[in-house]
Amino acid sequence: MENGNNVTEFILLGITKNPGLRKIFFALFLVMYVVTVLGNLLIVATVIASRRLRSPMYFFLISLSLADVNYSCVLVPKLIVDLLSESTTISLEGCMTQLFAEHFFGGAAIILLIVMAYDRYVAICKPLHYATIMSPGLCCLMVAGSWVGGLVHATIQLLFMIQILCGPNVIDHFMCDLFPLLKLACMDTHILGLLVILNSGVMCATIFLILIASYVVILCSLKSCSAEGRHKALSTCGSHLMVVMLFFVPCIFLYMRPVDTYPIDKAVAVSFTVVPMLNPLIYTLRNADVKNAMKELWKKPGTLGVTNLHV
Image (cartoon, rainbow, N blue to C red):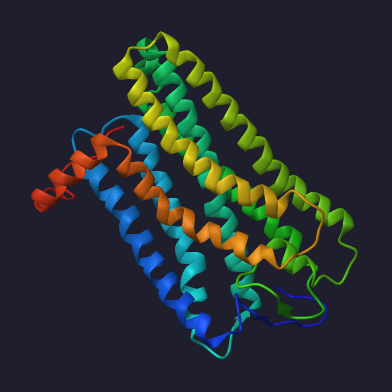
């Protein structure tokens, strides 16, 4: 990763310079990180161990949980260490790796939300054809497509950034992200900024509108369902919509705009570290099947790893 002025590391200014607040944020993010990792891994273990969670929705939920865990592991440990450290630097290689991994796992998670919305659409609107449409082969293909989509998205972002950094090395942020890095570019970033908006902002906005439209169609179709079926569908779709809103609103705010940075960007970006922690709570507290499976798992911890997962 060479560049014209031989920049080898960056200085991250972090969330705040206030020592008291840094200690508070350290404790807060440490707890959030532990909850995120344990919560998502608990979902993975529960789905794998439970015989009652064999529908495609839970197969997709495993992938989403793994994406959330990896996304948090990319961002939060560095943030936690920096909150107690006087030296908050990151190497050029580390910065580019963080940027790539952040958009890889984030992009995969975004596409997985579309997959999960499609799964709910088929389950609710075409229940008699659900097993035929959502075949194991199609489910595996959609999950693989989500990860490939995230890979392509992240690769494009990395190629945008890797050749333009040659000037200042102070990043007014707690992580390496697109717009803060564009501020350090040694060239006119107008065209590049439009490409970033197209690859990130337009992507977020388009997928958000597709998801909202799909759930509107699903909700409109509930008129023909029984009261019990309507309640279960509303509970499931409500969980998905909460995740969609929590993730996409900050994403659209950060990337669907002209190239510039604002003080509020850091606070909005923090939400990306919160959503992976909330996903386990949202999907378990509003899902009786998952809660019952977790109770069984708690009573019989020896079942972990014994049952094979089938889509």
